Image 1: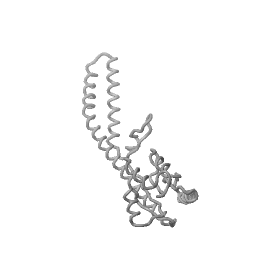
Image 2 (image 1 turned 120 degrees about the vertical axis):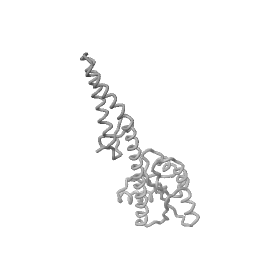
Image 3 (image 1 turned 30 degrees about the horizontal axis):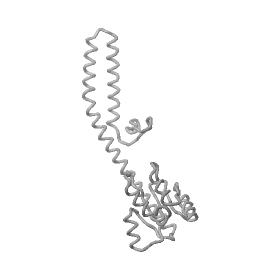
Image 4 (image 1 turned 60 degrees about the vertical axis):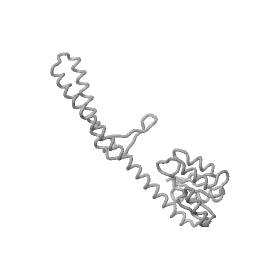
Amino acid sequence: MRILIAEDDFTSRRLLKAVLAKWGYDVVSARDGHEAWEKLQSVEAPKLAVLDWMMPKMDGIEVCYRIRQMEKTIPTYIILLTARDGKKDIVRGLEAGADDYIAKPFDNNELRARINVGRRIVELQAALVEKEKLQGVIEMAGAVCHELNQPMQVILGLSELFLDDLDDNHIKDDIKEINAQVKRLGRITKKLSGVTKYKTKDYLTSKIIDLDKAAE
């Protein structure tokens, strides 16, 4: 999992980055609040962030405020790193949008435990989003199948009648092709009705549902 650390002190930032990398995290670092804010706005922004309270250009509190104003499917889990441990400061940080805080100087085991909590929450949120997406796909697939099945049956029935009455082979070939395409639509709707997973594939510049994998 990717994690962003925002710390203006070079030595502290370097040590924190080394510790997190050792724990298996893909670390993105920022030297000040403004850089952290820019990186957290990107499409591939980390879902975990450790922000120092006191930073130049923009402090951690302001970054928290701005992140919470953004509309995100999975919100960023923010741990505020601070030398302030007074109750008023803690309340201020949490009200600004931080999910947790850790006081400096911190113990590595405590930091790891708090980050693990954040990771579990992010993973649970991601699983919930996938479940909601799947439910939406299943409902849409059911509606599409229901709406298509009846007209396809009518087209197939009429085409069979036309084939029996026509003598023109060219027209018969065209009707057979229509028949084949309708049957192809039938196979597609069968796959739709069997969707059990949310799987996508690249298509041009976007993504579409991968029916073969979604209906496995």
